[in-house]
View 1 (cartoon, rainbow, N blue to C red):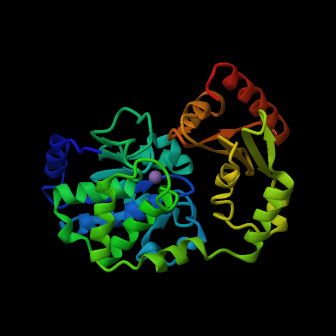
View 2 (cartoon, rainbow, N blue to C red):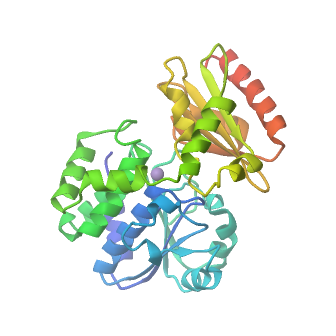
Length: 340
Ligand SMILES: [Mn+2]
């Protein structure tokens, strides 16, 4: 991942005078979304700016321990405060998503501020047009690593405090599946080394993020794998689905299905795994793959979504049964074209 030096200088110019700044991130914010937002906010505050972080809805409960996370404005819970911050912003940073439509319930509110300049900092494929400045790096393993690199280029790593180091590490760890997925570069591990020098304790962070679930979540996971996992396409493609009543039975909380979709990929033959999660008005589709199987393409073609080559998401607005039928037909077509 190579930063564009001209873009860094343009960013420096945008930040030359103290600004009112809002940092927004995507719906169902994950560790990378909140981690990168909070660390970037601190870096900006160190330059004298006033900064608010806003997310559309709640982050999962296993991130509650993160330093300063209580200061992140949740639009769904605090619409007035979030709207006031957005209305008065001179500068809006969009972190860890590629298109303002990903803000869902926050999209309209963001559009009401027509004067603020907008900067995109993201690592998903196919960034939208219309930003005043774009840092789009699909070859960065996380937005946290991208923010780290921007801080390094703009201010030097000396400004990174221990809380910032913890925030950045959470995104680097979760978006790489604990350093197991793509784009694990020497630069990433050099960044981790710097975060260690700032005092982060990796086993503690690991425990707080990965070993903090409820018993209901563990039982839901067992249920999903045992009762709901289906293998198709000669055992090479897996899918799981959970309806609202099934989730309710296990005391589901947001974030509880985190990681479920990855598990079928522990089966040697499985190259692609999909999870269908029922929400009130739609079904959320999560896709994961290994190697050359491109779920970004699959999500774009069949589920109005996208993301990364090996991890993507989308939505379906028909029933669970129809969604699964559509999925099975899509897998057949995808395979017939040689993509599977
Ligand atoms: Mn990310």
